[in-house]
Length: 303
Image (tube, rainbow, N blue to C red; front, side, top):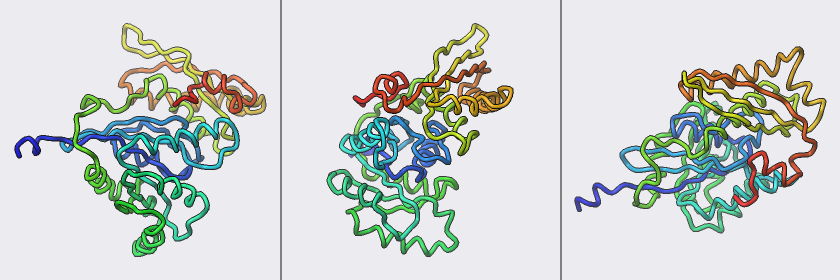
């Protein structure tokens, strides 16, 4: 009996849902540190981002997948494959939806995938902070309860951190007992170079708003630390058209400076050191339909 008390739980959990439902925001709050990029635009998460939460109960390894949607190009197909492939690899699945009694085609497609899996599925109704009357939650829970055999239904607000502790408790409830996969102080297995690239991309998407469509990637060419601890980072924003390049740079380089300043501040907070960030902009036409360029920008079809 004593041994059982000491045993801890550990396992893999994935967050799925349609684009822009708040998966990255929720994961960032659950682990207590910003790792996945968040943006008002859908489809900002392109690779599975593996983040780790450890406490006295055990360890949760989160895989944040791209949103499941209808693919429009090679990048879109890759993102859908990554999302659906992850379902068979994890111990618990979190399905995030927005508060609504209308279940559209996108949700029904996800429910079809979930009805094929054996793992416990927790339905997470996000954005409950947007409701005028909290009693509405019961109607939304009722609308979804028969679409899939859910282990639990948990209403949350990722933005306001409402019920996120309850959600963590529910995840541990369904995880198996086992050894930890990572050291206690590990938060992510993403290389810092990739996190830096994603942060620059987030700032670009946020500051450019609707001016640039989704076709931008960021590569980090250089990342080195000086003897005095300052981190030098050189990164390139890749876009699909010459007209986009002009918008990203801005008048007299003003937009590129804003993107660089915002990304540098966040990188300094994360790395706890001074950062010297230099940004360039390159045009690579239709890179999202080129397997070679996709691999160059970190999107590997074998994931």
